[in-house]
Amino acid sequence: MPHSNIVLPLGLQGHRGARGLFPENTIEGFRAALALGIDAIELDVGLTADGVAVVSHDLGLNPDIVRDATGVWLPGPGSALRDLTWEALQTFDVGRLRPGAAYTAQFPLQQPCDGARIPTLAEVLRLDAAMRFTIELKTDPRFPDRTASPADLADATLAVVDAAGAASRIDLESFDWRGPRHVRRTRADIRLAWLTRPETVRDAHLWWGGPVPSDFGGSVPRAVAAEGGAIWAPEYAALTQDEIAEAHDLGLLVLPWTVNETAAMRRLIGWGVDGIITDRPDLYPR
Image 1: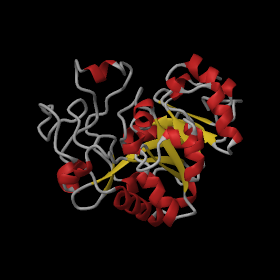
Image 2: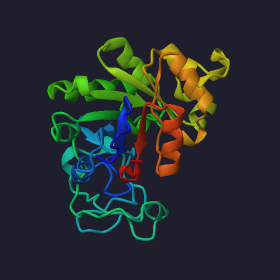
Image 3: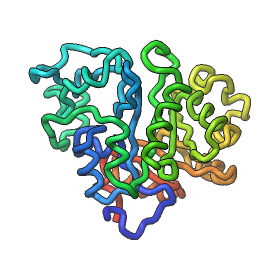
Image 4: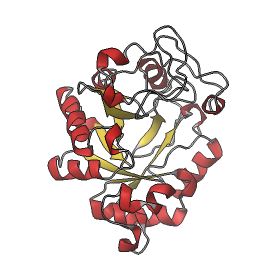
């Protein structure tokens, strides 16, 4: 286990599997991440044109990771997932990073796996009957026509989770708070996480679907607690020790993302975070 004697309630979570080391959001990458001894997999989900819940971070085909059936890199941003059928989606290879891309430079140690495809959520949930999953609902209120609605995506995701008997080992999260809010109203058995970063806090009128920080004296933890909790998932670089303490006083768990340096992990653990999402679980302090 990479995290040995350090125990966190929400554990060490591999971001998109462990994209610093393996192709993101792929079966091959998830298997390799599991072998590192992570406690949970963080992944993203969207819907195809024929209603299949698939695991992909991007709303559409990303030219930095997608090649067509002939092995040629996409010349630019591709179709939205919601405009492609599941069968059509399977013609694309997402097993390596595009040479020379800025995105590729962020992950120089990523090991390619040619032939990897965008998987279904059902496939991923079958990987390990004991593994926990943090599932991000990928909707974006700035581009409402690029995805299913937050409620429809949440319902489709939970239908897959229920079919797999996995409701007790998943958390659902989103920057677009309309999705978790829908789940809160309809499924009290599902634990929720509320994602934030400075941009979504700044534009909370859009991302939070109603409330804004000034309603809570500028406190993001108070806004999360008002939604019913149970987890606040903030961008780690903007997180302070005082905010973690405030969140804990409100009964929240704190799960920062995406923490890719050992020194930052040590600092956050010292501040009392309840879990860590990382692209590099191999750097977790022993």
